[in-house]
Length: 511
Image 1 (cartoon, rainbow, N blue to C red):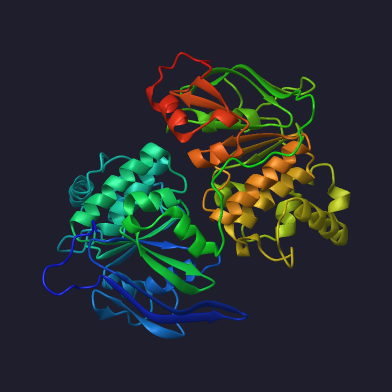
Image 2 (cartoon, helix red, strand yellow):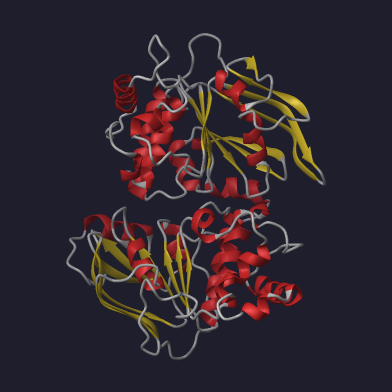
């Protein structure tokens, strides 16, 4: 095991002993036991609804168990509160960003522990020097004086991690830490985790990406239906074994079968010389009805900018983007009006009104020009139910808040919105981020079914396996330029990686 072992008698960083928790009508956890050693990276796995979130809330003091106990470093967590957990050295890296954009990097790092002088005044010089020392200790190439708004999403994540460990953390809980990161950014995060491991800090790592687990974790605990169904030494198991434990069934990671497509795949969207400096160079590209076109590339490759041009979220600085029929797409064009739907990478921040009803979120794409129709709640509900059925959303009451749905169902709500708006082109950026494995394959099948109906689907993904399962055609970008195009049935992770990393940006080279 790669985790460093404490000398002498083993001392546990975290012990969860026979914990159970129920909510009205739901048994979230039943008799769950888990233990993490100092310096160990321990993965917590399970599909959405398995009980991971409830267990994390209990470990971090946000929820109190109905039965059982939690010990951190041998000391009982009491009372169950976030402050008590922090006193014992528990820190959390949330999936959603917790950055104060108006503050500096240094102020964000030390937000919970600002240094004060004799009179209780905050010393700005001390803030910068202490924060920079913490960043340097973790091997992070960041300037403590820089404003937080200047940081990339990956850098913001690393600042949050520096904040989490700045007060001698004994246990860091990471909840889907790579959900919005590119592959090279994930590499930086893993290097930081390695530094934490070497200092004896334990990491409880929650992820839906099994390849990450096999790269970074020592041990994995699997939950299913609120119960622990296995604890495995990662080096001694396989992905297939873990998936079987998670779902009690096999989930194949192979290219998915296609239904018959339209005989003539006409052009649905066309780009000619479209660019978005400084990130995206001029691109010539056609997207056809009835196909899944995947865009892949490393960080700063321009894939997200290209998707935004296609969806009309961003106007090209030069060149053109046109939909079938010749109408131009641009920043001032409403996506629904131009027949284009857009599912952003930040589903919760940009794609949904989390505290509003599922119904309201679905009909957002139809509000323009339907003011009279909108005043009939029964008609809205009937229309929303039809759209949800077509979108594959499983929900008992569409009038409840969309925040109560699983990640997979939330994503399908956004897709259902654009289906209701009669979109002919659907652009999705990181379509399965934060979605469990079974829900991923349901979304893949849904997208393939839509292409069989004639829709054009564009997917931006940093997941090679996802691309190889789903794509009919893969366009690879590097440094803002198209460096290769691969047919879907010839795409392999190794081939895409070689295109992303090793080919020169000559543009338009067909692999």
